[in-house]
Image (tube, rainbow, N blue to C red; front, side):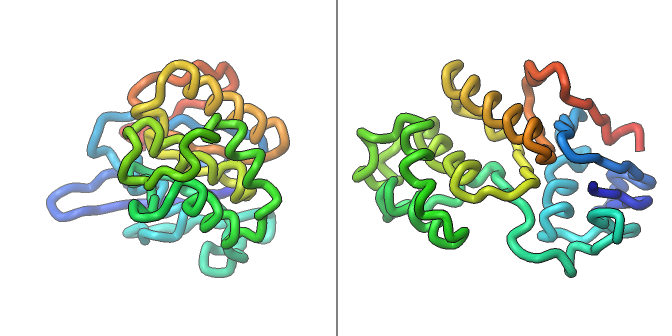
Length: 200
């Protein structure tokens, strides 16, 4: 369970939200739906521990463990930046993240799922935007945390790969994971809960 306790975020000249309070149970898919500049990315960054709220806090579980107290890594965050090392090959990038998570045995499954076999020895800078995104998304398989933070990760994906992503999200939720996502396109996931930050 994740609890948001009267969270507020101010940036110079603007208050994005003031009283964001919410409890999210396992198996939830949360779609953050609000206009650009309303704080969606900032909220994901706060959950990941990258950014601090102006007020309030975020806690985990019944014992209300704070972000600073959580064992790392506790989440998988994929944002606008694919976090690829452009001078490394596709395989080297996938192996880099799997090595951090201690899940080298999952590399083959990630490669096969996103059909990257023919690109393994291409440098990341040689890839199209869509292929770079697919390589980044292999982290959802090789970094098996129970909390996913996905910021417009469907951008540059074709219909087939969007379906693969959707399947991963549903499977993760079915296994008790929690997923927060933002996208300009309403997700075709019937079980997703829609949160509008402008209401807070």
